[in-house]
Length: 149
Image (cartoon, rainbow, N blue to C red; front, side):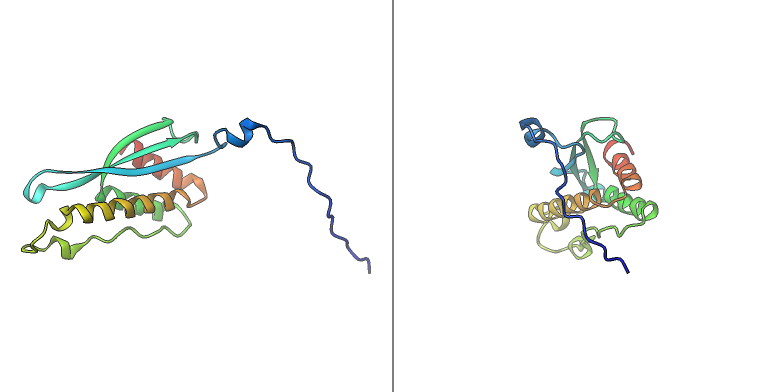
């Protein structure tokens, strides 16, 4: 019986120059959620969040874009990802039903601290979604969420 020996030779790599080391990565997608704004009055009141995207991925038509989305749009995105991808989609932050009860003594879901917590949780959610691969379904749904819809 022949014994196999592992090949331990080093891989030959090309020397790295400054542009390789400090230039933009070959494929990148940066998504930031920020600048929450509450609009409307009474039962028609809701909060929107600004989504800023920078990318060089070909599925995105624009290399930089900014749109405003509300929580229900993130629910739509999650449902699309679950429907189209074969990976586990991260959970969204909760609906905060208790914060919507009347006579709370605070602004409930429109309280500044709650809006900030939700903004951070939505940014974590969308960046975890960006990490969901394979890219086909995920990037198609993400590009639809942040550009069109």
